[in-house]
Image (tube, rainbow, N blue to C red; front, side):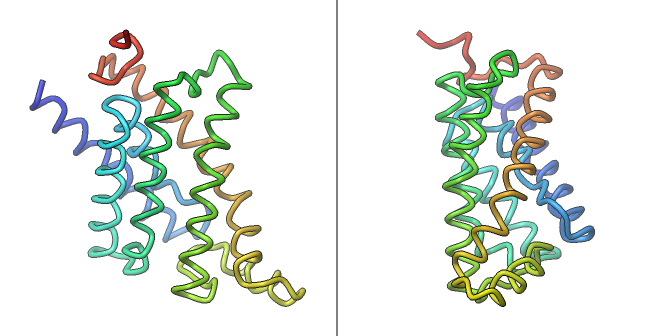
Length: 185
């Protein structure tokens, strides 16, 4: 079991890094949380947090130094994804619950990301949303408001895609993690 868990965690981190690289390249969506969701769904919040943190440590070292600043965001996504999954909020068969799970994970993560972007970068980061931040700031919005309002719609789309892909991968793996629903008492 330990070898399998380590292998799945490595795969989750690799998926995140590939997504992050694509995101930096195309400047649209983030795609760096699919593996975080996989780890959180299979093994719980702590593993989701670890997968997210390691992803941005590696991404920051390899190709996007701004990634280091957003490690707390990935950790928050891993924590919330694991908690919402345990309470069965990521069920494709129940769209309303799925929407609550995505919103409950995305809104706090977007607020944290906007806070970090505001404090560390005055709202301008390596993300494609920086252009929207500039436009919104020109209308008189605060840096935080501009960052959050540009971040949230993109994050909702991104996290919805990430969750759906993660659910599909977890199903295809046929893995029953220590944190999966079948082991709940």
